[in-house]
Length: 181
Image (cartoon, rainbow, N blue to C red; front, top):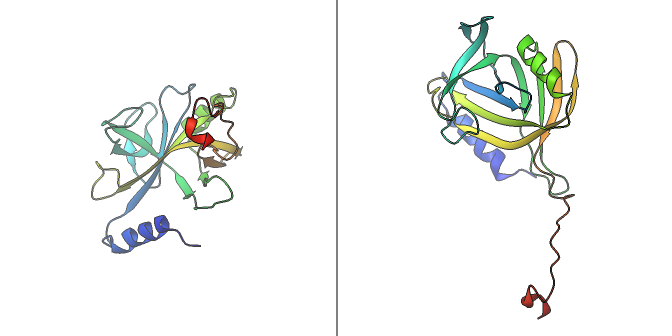
């Protein structure tokens, strides 16, 4: 079954000018990180720093949890992300793989796996002709089921699993009289 969300994205991509490149990005955040780890699918430019890195400077949206409204550096990386499909039987998941992972990102992830805290994920898309605007955003994801080698990281990012969540409220007819009708 094809969902309206996928149809809308396909329509937007089909109507975009052919000379405009879409930059998919990924932001990973964890309590052990000094700052969020951000990657972009692009060759990028050589960014000054210690050490200098290949990346792209893009503006984060005003309501972002970290660096709201700021220009930040996304590291150039080969990222493949499959957006979640609408499925009535299981919680939606996004498949993520990163190839040729920059050393800075690998070090940050090595620290994160030593704790039980989840890694928060935000997927954004920018257009090359408008790097100050997030044109598509998917947030509220948590990274899980991760495998890593020296040069590749694969994982699944999903939303809160409401199917299996325990709700602690007891609905009684004394508290909720309309239940007794």
